[in-house]
Length: 174
Ligand code: NI
Image 1 (spheres, rainbow, N blue to C red):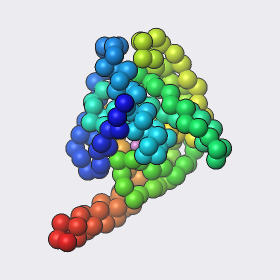
Image 2 (image 1 turned 60 degrees about the horizontal axis):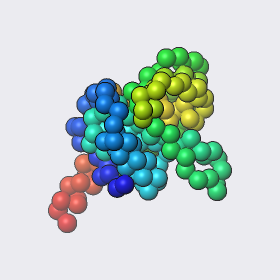
Image 3 (image 1 turned 90 degrees about the horizontal axis):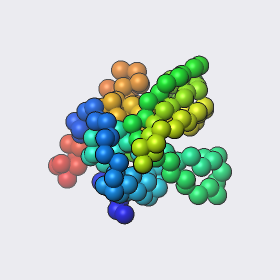
């Protein structure tokens, strides 16, 4: 297993649409294991394959109890995940391993049902609400090339991108 290099905003690959996974072999298992390791070492609670530069519909989320300080991460892999039911709404403060130094409140569905395949191609369903529903929606967005920044108000987003540019120019000079 190895830790993948995480692409950072504004890398244009983060805006691309990922392809369906069609081959369920050793390569897919190895990629999923690398993604789990990358998520845990970051540390983060979710990671989508395009963040590791692989444009495939594959995500990993941590399904352990995130409120528990002594928790051990429990990575869950979802291949070709699709939201098949969504209800309600909630506002949650989000961040992203591909977006440095920025967090913002985002409105998402409160409860969702996701259909996905496991690493052998078997279909399964996950029902989630609250924070886990947020994480799943955030990661599935990545597969469509959508960052959480696109759910943030244009003013907040432009303040962030301006400060990012300033920092970069400073780094380039020093
Ligand atoms: Ni993200």
